Image 1 (tube, rainbow, N blue to C red):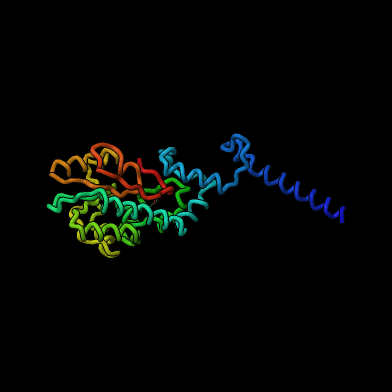
Image 2: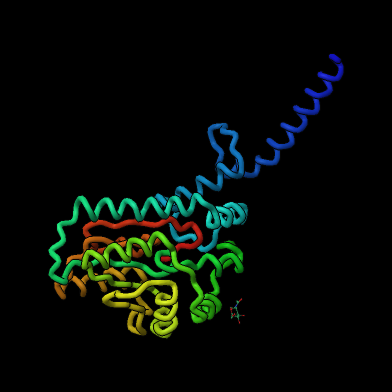
Length: 256
Ligand SMILES: *[C@@H]1O[C@H](CO)[C@@H](O)[C@H](O)[C@H]1NC(C)=O
């Protein structure tokens, strides 16, 4: 009995030794201060710091986290996180927006991973773990089969009901206009005021500048932009901005 126990303890410590050794690669990279971290801890903290905008300009999801991020994008947690973003927008609308209802109240939405999900594309293309091939992404967009993000559709319809002008501002290029409209209408979005896509003039601007310039024009036309819902910081940062901005989670890619 005692020998068995000693044997078990020996096995246990060998296994612990092995698993600790396994994480050494990670520990050397991130796990300072002697914290024993799992791959899950490591990848969740990567994801969180993307959302906090501490991690910027990443080209691809780190290889060791591709599986984790893929799972997150298909998870209930992703849905709950997105629903919370939309719920907070709704709270803001009902408590802090004194809408004038004169046709100049406006709200801006992104399209990709805000109104429409590109997750089916990324699922087939390495879940953010390989460098983006824009040609192949645009081919996929042309098919117009992107599903709606249901919570965003709820906010879209609520705003419409309140008489707020809905303005879609996307980094998609003009050549995708008809595919984009078909896709949006197909999954339930209709009644927006304007759909602004990137023309050839805008192709040399970075996305944040392009979107800020669009807002400047909207404001000069007299729109009061109460809010923006987007999944990228480049959609909500830069001046002029909206009265408030709301960011949906998106750890799959970064648009500068
Ligand atoms: C990008 O995608 C296009 C269209 O699917 C393909 O023809 C091309 O070879 C791809 N480029 C790379 C570098 O993989």
